[in-house]
Image 1: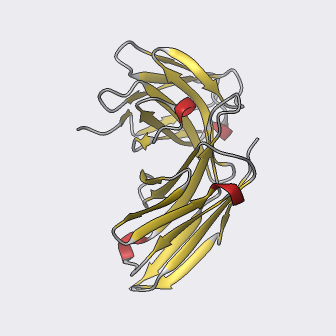
Image 2: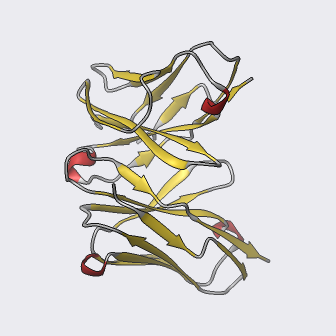
Length: 115
Length: 110
């Protein structure tokens, strides 16, 4: 079974731009969660989507948004990029999602650098 | 929200040694997972263990939910065990999410 895939793997943007990251979950998984990892803040939860609906949300500003498609693929968008948005963005998929305490399977991540 | 503390923050061991990593959490959880992050950033799920004991080869984990801690044991360490080990917990009290600890950086010296 193919694992979680994320595209692109690396991205360089400038302040003020916007960016869209993509995550394809393991086949059959309906939950996709997004996380931001930085040296200063560690791993932080952004949001979770399940069956095209945002089910849980972390403490990030509205510049961070996401969506999920009917095939469970998910995209995350960050608008008006700031230097502090430079991070490794990870997505994870699971069968039932965080509400049911399900095992999370992570993708390789997208490393975003904001100049 | 839930607080997660991991200890020790850093651990340097000779190949072949055994180690114990600890994760303390501040509230009841319905989800606890251990992950290994390799040098390329990939997070690999080691155990899903909200309670009880599990073993997988040289690795084992125990969670004592009533006392709010979990332990990850690595026996006969190999250089490929190097990386950062994270404990992550989740609860079903409202806004569900996985809260990660700050990790234990393990370095195995040949």
